[in-house]
Image (cartoon, rainbow, N blue to C red; front, top):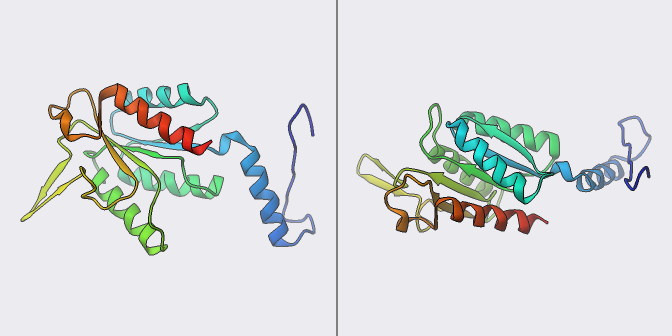
Length: 187
């Protein structure tokens, strides 16, 4: 222990059985407050910067990862899982983005947790200035009222949204409430 901090050094050549090494590595990760991550996904840099500041206001030790589209988000999520061996505390997700939109990210993450036999995935906060609805040929999907089937998901309107009553919360005040909720749940 140095300066009030416990140092655990675990390496592949330490002679320990794998299960014991895995246990020590898990303890080390949980001792490290920098293993709490959040993934911010929006093609607008200004939105990502603002949400990152808001998250850091709740807990400055949280590591923020940013993605500019859905494909980038799935890649960053794989990196987070590999590096930290845990899921991000939550994902803040825009719906309308180039390359791969938020709708497809939700669909893929839902499929992932269902295939793993889980009833819920990483909490997602949808932060969108659109109505939260998407039309496809003879089909209309909505982000509201659990219609995506993704659990847990909340939808928050950006300030420019015209139909604020359609969202779980509206504007900056609503976003801050949900950020605080998910961060407090993690601690």
